[in-house]
Image (cartoon, rainbow, N blue to C red; front, side, top):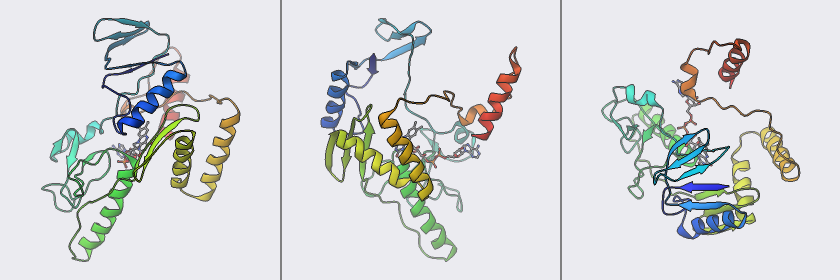
Length: 245
Ligand SMILES: Cc1cc2nc3c(=O)[nH]c(=O)nc-3n(C[C@H](O)[C@H](O)[C@H](O)COP(=O)(O)OP(=O)(O)OC[C@H]3O[C@@H](n4cnc5c(N)ncnc54)[C@H](O)[C@@H]3O)c2cc1C
């Protein structure tokens, strides 16, 4: 198994120490980690690297980053890097009464002047400030700027292995993986859902994965009409399934 990363190290969102810990852990499990290596083309036989080297592969998993919804580019709003530019209080620039948060908004964190990353942690924090600002606006009170101190970052790097930086402390291996799971479990809404996920995760620690669904449908694909082909029933059924996701 080969892991390609075009940057000089793994997990640039985390500290260098944790990036190296993840690298070491993957290598120890037999993964060939190639940093500073860029893929230029993927075809059915494998991956062509930018230096023209060809890596034969039967399965290629691509985790290149996400981007905001292309719908944003088609609006009349001020857009930078694909994201809607907002004022410090999350109001859309030049459009009083319009607000934007989350992945599609270019939010500046006044705490350190950085651009808020497109993560759930920041989206939820922005939502809290937005709710307060909506109320303040309705009551004719002043709004407040978005200011947030990140709690840290975590990543799972394989079965029972993780890296985490929480409140300035760094962890790797099983403790980081357990922290990662505990944190996400704590964020799940409703006790019933928490319990169901806890049971499924515990089950997954001792038994192999039950692979019953391999297809994911992106929002943009929902705009496309159902494909008509020789196996029409299957394709139409897939479209119906995508619509209900
Ligand atoms: C694979 C993956 C893993 C991630 N892991 C993490 C993680 O571990 N930790 C973390 O903090 N963040 C993670 N993120 C990022 C996190 O999911 C996002 O930052 C977060 O969901 C952003 O929230 P949002 O409300 O801006 O957008 P979303 O949660 O994407 O919500 C946008 C909603 O708008 C709907 N929508 C889209 N187009 C339209 C339309 N035209 N009309 C109406 N509705 C529409 C969508 O269906 C969706 O429900 C991950 C993202 C991905 C893709």
